[in-house]
Image 1: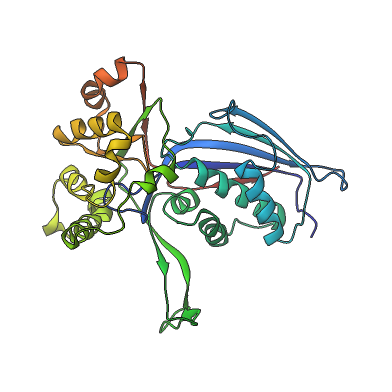
Image 2 (image 1 turned 90 degrees about the horizontal axis):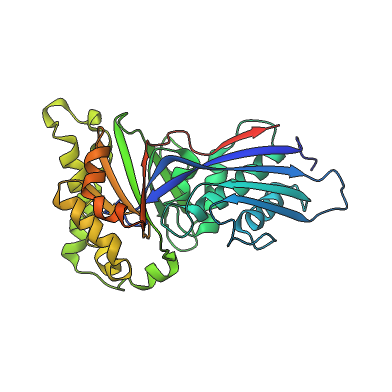
Length: 334
């Protein structure tokens, strides 16, 4: 297949997964982006990748075929029928690495979206990007909001052994694999992300999880995650059921499944979360950590920074005050 263009620009949002109660299920796109430019080689004999990185990870990320954007782009090119091509990747990274803000999901989505844009001269097929990204990542909670924007809830459809899909009356069959739905959030929903100067790998964070949990803890999280869509957008509630939006956020982000087991791996982060929650703010670990996420309806910038004054003054933390990204990955053919 011949590429439809020689240059593609991709913009992918940071994401925060779990949001407390929605372990491996819920994700939120944040208005903070990595921007990448892919330029195909004009020489068909040249199939090498040249990688240039500015910003986050410029001193640590590889500049060869092991770079996650490069390896994902290669795989996606094969999937979309482009074969092996030579290209230059220029990455302008803003999303912190290994902090729980979806840097790996960003890399995967960027590589796939770029390959799709080179292969198809039409609007980006987000469903195709999501399916491949979730398969590569192995879980959909970060890639879903990176692709679609907003608040997403995802699941892994399982059917009887040997059955690939289930017929649904009046609609398309539901196939095995990852699926997601996308929710609108209120315009006044804001996110503060407190970024520490230490890292925590997702693998290490997962190793801290138990193999079994008490049944009552599972029930607790089911009840809390059920509140999340309404807590993010109270306008969806029947008028007689309206409650304080920030009170709903506080309840919806309570968790017993994963954060307590990981607290010892990120003691400074956990201390900040407890401090924020003691003041009534909906605070959670962002993804696998160690970033701390605080969700709030309305402007609470000054109050949040006052609560975290000691941490910010130490020089070991910085804060990002962000809106929600509602667009997801964006591509531009040049």
